[in-house]
Image 1 (cartoon, rainbow, N blue to C red):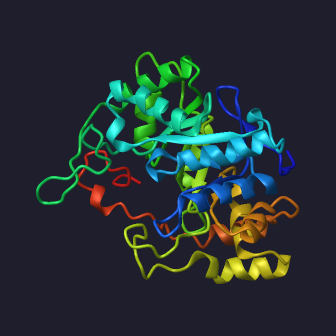
Image 2 (spheres, rainbow, N blue to C red):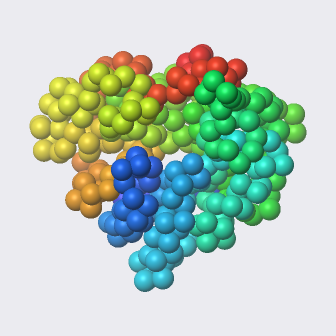
Amino acid sequence: MALKADSRIELNDGHKIPVNGFGTYAPPSYSKEQAKEAVMAAIDIGYRLIDSASIYENEVEVGEAIRSKIADGTVKRENIFYIGKLWNNNHCPERVRPAVEKSLKDLKLEYIDLYLIHSPVEFKPGDDLFPQDANGKVIFHNTDIRETWKALEACKDAGLVKSIGVSNFNEKQVELILKMPGLKHKPACIEMECHIYLNQNKLLKFLKCHNIVPVGFSVLGSGRAPGWLEDQNAPKLLEDPVLNKIAKRLKRTPAQVAQRFLLQNGVVPIAKSFTPARIKENFNIFDFELSEKDMKDLDGVNKNMRYLSLKIWEGSPKFPFHDC
């Protein structure tokens, strides 16, 4: 299938997800109003997949942006594919539906298109987003993730969410859900860090076998924000010489080529920017194609390197990267 700006991939539950998306996470230096303006600009440019999460604490503004673009006739609600996420303090089954309903209330939308368990790591249940003990260490909890999944299935059956999936899970953790007794709905998607330095080839093969669509974040690498970046001295992805050589030959930007690599690998890339010109640039990845050699060369720069820093979560028995 030739990929176009309005192409969609059918999920295993029959719903369809756009092939590229716009991310809304921003460090504290950006205002929530900037997030709203960026989402409106993204929709005007052509993005139809908007990726957010309750922990980003900007769902009110993201919802305002979506609804404003519906109100002015730019899009209809069914054109927008919104991804939301269940935060780590809400894994207990009785907290799942209230968390979904809180997001819907903040967004002022009738349903969420795709709702993900943000991470397999669970924090102490409650309203504290980052519960800590007297020594400042995160307080973990250990709900059976299959019980959380059953509560998500109930939200899907109730029409609050159209599709359900996971984020930051490893293969064993996805299998735990796939093999659970009485499974009603398979995960439709998994969102994960994925880029030329972390190509996730092994996990991608597994997901393809189970008809689970991969969605990639940090596709352009990462900023230098402390607490987010695993290694402040990590190489800057967009400065990679192989990537830049291909981009120069094709007269494209490194960001466009980095996303196109994922697109041709079957991954839905989520790009982030609060600059309209950059948002437009990131969206324009459909009028060129990478050759087999280009794909092989970019696959060859893989370092199995993560930008996302989750060191403080390693004390959890569910820390997802132990087995990856």
